[in-house]
Length: 165
Image 1 (spheres, helix red, strand yellow):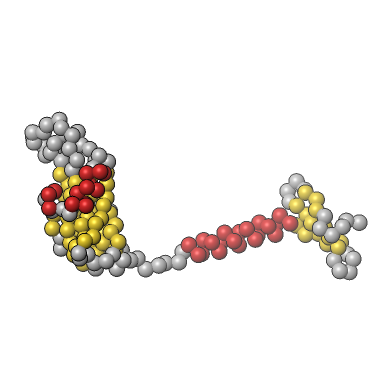
Image 2 (cartoon, helix red, strand yellow; image 1 turned 90 degrees about the horizontal axis):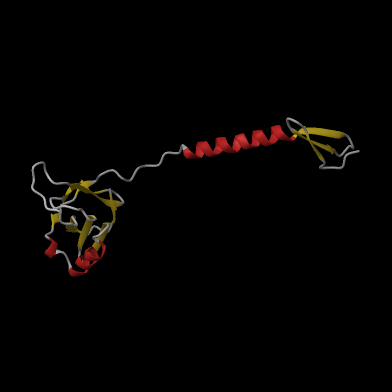
């Protein structure tokens, strides 16, 4: 007689043999039970992934900003830019109710590059900034001098995180 919990592995499934309380031998197809349970778990996980959550990236309003000359940025921010300008960087700096956002595109091997701010707006949870690196225009005379194009904008500090997009 088989003891309770003994199992035999077959070619297709695992069968579990055990005695019930009345002493009768019961056979359960263990593989089907496990497969069904796993399928149920996967289905439950898929349903959980289908829950929709409200997006908090919807624009509330465009923000007014000023693009600063490189000399007009606060000294601490200028130091951070100088330390990071060789590679792409994204920096924020807040001081006395003003927020400064700086984004740089690293070393460029010629002159003629600039950075444009294509969008700056507020959402429920954050401030989003979109910038683009603009290359030299066709026919523009350039020099083979390494430059470090970046932009610094100043705006009112609204107390939200900045997302560089």
